[in-house]
Length: 294
Length: 269
Image (cartoon, one colour):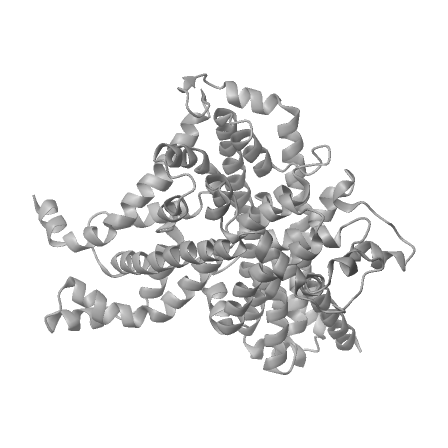
């Protein structure tokens, strides 16, 4: 009785939330539930779903291409994320040490520009830079007596090429976050360290880095998740090839769903992908956040 | 000694990072014969607008740009409005179910799009929305992150302000409109930038629900350009330059807000 009265008194709260909640139900929650259900069914658009139990999962997990795509995705992530983070840490350190505020702003903006440029645009220009016959990269390397390389057309080099492109472009947000966090470290810590005779390297190692841990952890989790879902470059630059050398998990899901229209299998794969993403995030927090204080 | 090496390395990495963007401009302004020449010319000489003329004659890039603006503008406005309203409700109102709703929003924030996209596509087909604005706009009208961000932002406002307005005879909508909205502006600006950038650069969803050229957004328009003119780098770079321009101008104008949006956006959890 009193609950209905409270609900009625606070009716405005529900009214304000009504539209968002309806939209979430229709476009987030129901599709999510449907994906999980579809993973247990055989379904092609226009047809009727036929329950097949675990068949899609058995099929996906016994499919060499699924494991290959998982391996490629893991390799890509393990290459891109640590390299990006290390470079971002270095850049943030040097930029933060610049004396003039305008110089800091200019460098931060320079590294942020590729981040506001869409993946489609970057894919176009990198294809051109990677062009084996007339691309800038082979031209520059020819001075060092190297190449010409096939880059994205070579099964051995296609994935490293995509990784190189990702490492070259993705520092803007990390630099902004890291320099902001470095600005929050009290100067007295460094003064005390200096009085104790600690040099710049020791100060960085003993003060800056430990205090950046929450920011680094956040960056680690978000860049890992983003790398795991790499798609635009793969579709536009390699089409998953050559010889499946760049077929990542999301690209595999995309082709299974929207080229072969095997929605059941694609839904099973999407569920597996989501579980792995959740698992990765939990593991990273478990391993690294145990002694992080917020 | 060391700092100088570091600074030289910083400058070098900055140049390397901007190189692809510079290369877009150089190639876009070269005549097709210069583009094909090897070794490549490092500056656009002689500079020419011919690639842009061929681009506008040979593609619907103007339409794609308009489509991107319509979709991104609508989605951004709706997210800012609904996000502020819902964020305010969750931050400042006490009602049964508040915790449940808030945690639902948080969990939805972590659901990867791949987990919803297949049934969502089936739904769009059923609604007969393939190749329409609705397909691009309606599923994105409100995103969980928008509510979360505004809730975090509005939580810091003193509750006394709201009580004082209510004493002065403001109704529920009046409190929102006269007290909350003006104070929420900085947060709304940050959210607008976040949403605008995300929706403008979205690739997978429009790729799936749009296949008619006249309905494409810029990003998938560029993809179709690549499929059609895959060796014509002068024209492709002109397309890249035209598409990159709005976001880069937007970024340079609102640069301080961008910095804030990144740091505020990171206070998840």
